[in-house]
Each structure stands twice: as structure tokens, then as C-alpha cells.
Image (tube, rainbow over the protein chains, first blue to last red):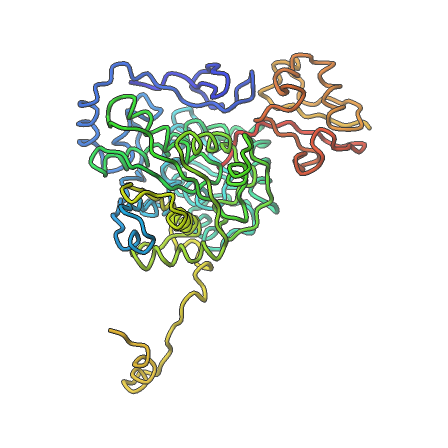
Length: 409
Length: 90
């Protein structure tokens, strides 16, 4: 089993496994293809179960001939049965995959672990990225752990928590006056002339493979079975489509039986190019200028938008968007019912789950998995003024006067 | 209007290695047609049925033409028309 080529998703032209991401014939995106001819599903499962406690237990399904060294191995995050949240939303069986439980507290550790290992394999000394925040944290940290130099490009108006949790690792943090899409365009241009590994530009075919590990973990943690429906946030659409690729691979190879679940995508109303295209029946997304508190999802020109649309349509899913207030409520309801504090992107996921349940899209017999991709401490502003703090003098009388009237138990 | 069209490295195989091409044109569409006249193979690489392929982004002095008038976007003297892959990021 080994990666064998980069293949264009549009015209199937093949390219060697190098730092490239665009098909020269049709400009389509390149993706890693594998040779799985010798794979025995039973043996593959046993190898995984005897593997490391993180994403490298799935090394046979990742783009490396041999398992690389990784000092910050992410993955194997909790999949929690969320009974009280299910009850609150009116869903039969609901699981929450808490990917905030990664080294830099978001799913981006998965993709960056893959990209950095590939950067080292290809001989790069410097890594870089265009980020809406979570990726910035991950690239800076993993570069520090690997002893590589790094440049991290972000929109300058990101949440302060995300800037601080990036700069601390000693990266060169560049705040760009513009939207994420401006940052992305700049990085695509820089990639032409700098000898750097941009994890989500020239290494994107490898980087995005890391998101498949969320699919593999879900299957393994559900006792080698599939969910009926997944709800996942969409920024570029890469995570959304790669979870499907991971599930598809394992279904094809016989590691799990069943069909691809319904895929529900979640966007913020203030940046919903994919949800809009879904609702309008378009094949392509019209770019937008984002205006939302869900900054980690604020990509107005999503690279994988067309594939996300196709996936939602062919699996009987949908792509919905929710308002900033609904996002804040989503953060609260998840925290109150599961003890998991998520950032705004997770609020988007929970709010869309609530919307689907309310609309009657989820059958009571369905097993649903919601993906929580990041940590609430990174977007603290979203919870400000959403609750009251009692302030008292340090006396019993003061406590009783203030709290007795509201105490229930 | 005289403008500079910037060609990404992935397409320089069909522009004899040229990364910047100076052409005349009133609109983005005119400027691209002028480039295609010099490098015919480029047309098929980035266009389809008279429009841009879906993974091709074009910017006029940094601004995505889809926020303007698409291929009808008018050009000013000295503008830079940049062609870039749309498959990065996220």
C-alpha cells in the first residue's frame, strides 16, 4: 500500500508526488491516489488497533511510504454520545466528535501534521500558510516542534486569542489588511517565487488528506460502523469532502460495511457561498465578502465549494447557514448539555443540527455525528454577555441575599 | 489600454516560459483574447465554452473580477491582470 501519484480531480491527468497542486492541463485541483491492491481488510484493522494513539495509526491510508516522525501527534479525539443535547434538539442518536482535543485545539493539527511531514520529506526548510486562525496556531506549533522556520499569513482583524496563540511559537506572523480571500491570493502569488512549503497551497493535496483521519476515527470509535448522517462546518469545503473520501475508501476496501452517510454542511449566514449555491441549485459558488463572527469559516471563495455541493446533493444531505445569534446559541447549548466549549465554527455546526432537527430532516432512527472542529477559548468574545455573573461581598448574608431568590437546587 | 497579464507558473509551459505579457484591451476579455492570439494553447487551458474554467481566478489589480463585471470588467492603463489557480486555501 502506498501513495502512487497526484491525480487531477477534473481530468484525471497524473503527476508525480511533488509539491504541486494544480493540473497544468485544465487547472483542476490535484489529489493523492493510492495503490491498495494488496490490502487485506482484517489485517488492516488489526494493524490500526495495534497502532499509535493518534492519526498515525492510519498511516497506511496517508500519503507516505513509511510512517514519518511526528513530535506533536494529533488525533484520536473523543467521540462523545451526547444524550442530553440529542434530547434538547429532538434527535434520536447523536454523537459529538470533539476535535478541540488536539495539540493546538482544532482539527487543523491533523492536516498540518501531514503537511509538515511531507514538507520535511520533500526537503523544505520553511513552511507557510494562509489562515483564518486555527491553521495559524497549528502551523506555528508544528513548525516549532519540527525545527522548521515558518511564515503565517492571516487577516489582521482575527480574534486576539488566535493571534496570541500563534505568535507565541516564534513564527513570523503576518497580519494582512484584507479578507481571508485576499490573504489566500497573496499566498498563491508568494508560492510562485518563494522556496517554501505553503501547507494549503503547494502542499494542499497532502495536507487535505489529514482530514480523512476524522472519518477513520469516527468509524473505529463507532465500533467499525458508519453514521447515517454527518454534520460538518464548511469553510473551503476541504474537511467536508475529505471526511467523505475517507469513508468511501474504507467502504470500498471493506474495512466497514454500509453506505456513505447523508452529508450536511454548516455555514454562517454572513459567509454562506456554498449554502447559497445549494439553495439556488447552482453548480458553482458565487464569491462573497464575509461578515460573520465565525471567522474560522470566513472564506468567501471556497476552493472545494463545487465538490461540497456535489457531495451534499448525491448523499441526500444539504448545506445550511445560520445567523450570528444562532451561532452563539449553538455554543451555549453544546456547553450546557455536554461540557464541551467550542469556538464559533462549532456553534455553526450545532445551530445547523438544531435547524435540521426542527425542520424534520433527521429521522428518529438515524445515528448522527456532529463535528466540533475547534476550542471555545479561541473565540471568547462570542460568549461575552451571554450569562450573568453574581458579584457579592464575602459574607453568608450577601450570598443568601443574592443567590437565594434564583437558587433551584 | 495597455495592461500586463500575469501568467502563473503552471501555465508557462504554453507561453514559452513568459510570466508577464503586455497587451492592449478595453476589458479583461479583450486582454485575454490578445494573450490567446500570441499563445493559442492557453485559451483551451483556462477557458471553456467562452467563459473561464471553474478553477481559474482572474484579478484586476488585486480585485477578483467576479466582484466586478467578470470578463466585461473595464481596464485602465497600467492595470495588472493576474491569472491564478482557484484551488488553494482552507
